[in-house]
Image 1 (cartoon, rainbow, N blue to C red):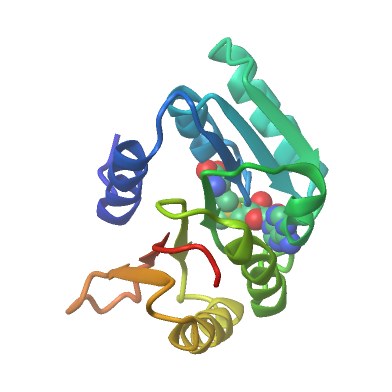
Image 2: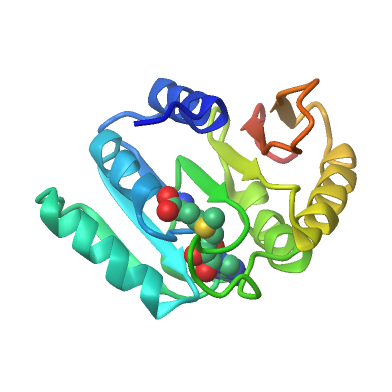
Length: 185
Ligand SMILES: C[S@@+](CC[C@H](N)C(=O)[O-])C[C@H]1O[C@@H](n2cnc3c(N)ncnc32)[C@H](O)[C@@H]1O
């Protein structure tokens, strides 16, 4: 299979931070590639998507791998707190479902609303990882809003790592890894 440096690095980071005691959320299930990867690392995975097609594809993928520790939820990631608590980490792979309707995509509002709900409830060493795509117009807008939102987070509560591929001409995706450092005061 062709190597994807950003996706592989995201998975490397996740494998360093997730153990078999952890509850993990896949905030953008899509075709279930990340859901399957996370299910093999974590105790339990809750995967969200707003498209029924994503749930069907992911269920097929998980069934083929005999995975049973995943709950698939047809709802927006803005409602993660309604379904899950004691979360160790949340993973976002932003954008649209490949080979499907490109107008159904994550947006600056849904992504930032979700982060706004999730971040205050994280405990020290919990994390959020985002893979951000900037090649499509909504992705550009989302990326700019995300950078602005992240720049305003309290740096003593959150450490933010950004991993990108500079010097490329094709606007590749980049990774944001947010680690909670302290409980909210
Ligand atoms: C790039 S795809 C995810 C790829 C997936 N991680 C994989 O491994 O196949 C982004 C997904 O986010 C979903 N999405 C868009 N807005 C959403 C929202 N508000 N809540 C949950 N999922 C959303 C889309 O339907 C799409 O399936």
